[in-house]
Length: 232
Ligand code: HEC
Image 1 (cartoon, rainbow, N blue to C red):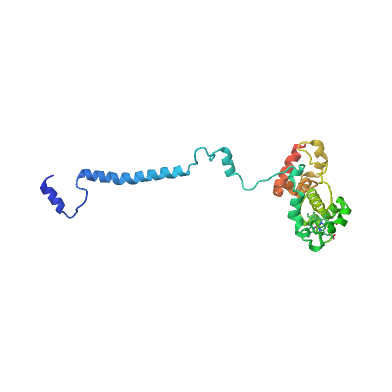
Image 2 (cartoon, rainbow, N blue to C red; image 1 turned 135 degrees about the horizontal axis):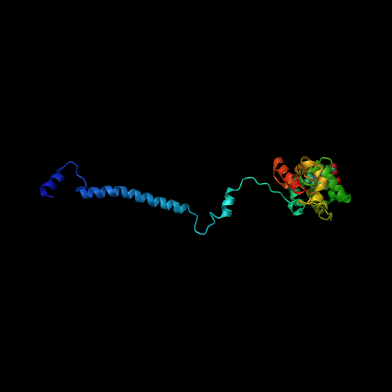
């Protein structure tokens, strides 16, 4: 470049850092490259951050199953298994303590041997019958919705805390009819699907209402239909 040229450029009104075509090309290239490199780095950073750490179970089948599992589940408990039912203490706390803890409405107070002694003398069966059928201000089942065995456990829990020595009530010998056991089911099939569904919903013997599940009537009926189908 000649001196005259530079001098002219320096004097020109559009003075800037780009003075040669090469600088112009470089400037254009950099003005594209810098943001693109920036974007690439950002994307890599973000996708790295979201990726589960090496060795984690983010994509393991079990973890995926856990994430996509439905909100509600029907849990069908084995009603012939007494451990599936609430303990006497659990039933007492949930249902009976409302009156019996403080001795509301003439209820014999929890742990008060004087209030319980005469009642305990009448025997476990009599106390159970009162609790199941209701007595005085106490509604049937203590106003709750437990299985007879659970009520029995609560009665034993309360009576024993007040000085009785009742044994833990056992599940009735007539256990739940086994799946596929034709003989056990034969007399029950006479009730029909609707009859059996009704007892499953209400509970029967050692079986808590809805078999202890939170299933809808339709769920229960589907399960009953399945069980009956297996027994034919
Ligand atoms: C609404 C209050 C109330 C609730 C809830 C309640 N009870 Fe009672 N319970 C009473 C009253 C009142 C009596 C006294 C009845 C009487 O002798 O007239 C009583 C008496 C009893 C007796 C003695 C019965 C007898 O024959 O002397 C037993 C056993 C008993 N309750 C068990 C239970 C159990 C088990 C539960 C929980 C599942 C329960 N109760 C929940 C109010 C209640």
